Amino acid sequence: MRKYDYLIVGAGLFGATFAQVMTERGKKCLVIDKRESVGGNIATEKVAGIDVHKFGAHIFHTSDKRVWDYVNRFAEFNNFVNSPIANYKGKLYSLPFNMYTFYQLWGTRTAAEARAVIESQRAAAGITEPKNLEEKALMSVGEDVYKTLIKGYTEKQWGRDCKYLPSFIIGRVPLRFVYDNNYFNDRYQGIPIGGYTDMVKRMLDGVEVKLGVDYFADKSAWDGAASTVLYTGEIDRFFGYALGELEYRSLRFETETLDVDDYQSNAVVNYTDFETPYTRIIEHKHFDRTQSSDKTVITREYPESYKKGSEPYYPVNDEKNNALYARYAALAEKEKNVIFGGRLAGYKYYDMDDTVAAVFELTDKLK
Image (cartoon, rainbow, N blue to C red; front, side, top):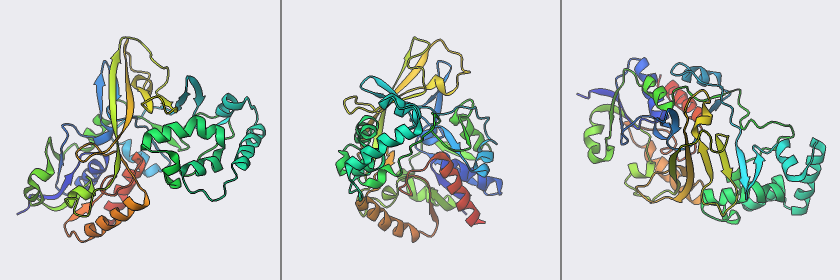
């Protein structure tokens, strides 16, 4: 007799949302995770009275009311608006690229003036069919924005020259010809008061959870505990890397508590020159300025190469890796009692709202 309807491997946002929805439908779920806390990469912890994002900054943003209403069942969200700053060799620029940025670069004051500079630089680049990320950026935003705010940051993030990165990584570069530092265009935005870990704990209220558990240490026993397995880990690991290893980029976080009230006066400062080894500094207290503390906590974020056993953060969705993933996905289709879901199993980067929406799509099918 199998004790559970679903074994959920991974207590991140995808696994927790799935467990909550299916438990609400009367299914018996067991959630396991190799870490000692729930929440996956959105986990937070209290340090010096400040909610610290343990694995990088996470701002919940969405225009999907169903998703927004759902997460608000488990947390009260503050009104944080993400307005990062770029530091390029000591000079500060507003993000996303907007009229403040253009004024800081060229002294332009009107949209017409800024457009004229950008169009002139686009024309000078003379690129119509970009073959790599650098050409895509030059075609989209011109030389100044690219060299000051994109090139160094991107090369640190991906560990290679922009000339050797596929153009699709950069997507459509947003240029805003208004004075607006709000990074996201979504209707709803904020951070749960008390942190994401508390939110995920509320989602898992009434669900059996076992932490510090390695699924692969006794895979057959765990599989035998439930009728169906939801697996949210690396898809290549599930199949024992039988077809080869997928590539990822990893991150290293260097966090310290400082005996000062304020360090950088903003939640996120990106370092866009190549010489600075980290991509950004996060100052956590600015995510919720109602938190009272005479100290501050900062985190420097260092991109790193991924090696088997380290933490995978960003899939390298180039042609070679996507082709390998497609072969693993074909194997996954043949698994009768296993569902694959989430960022690692799907080899695709998800924003948090996309994660919740993907669970809704999955669970709607399971009806």
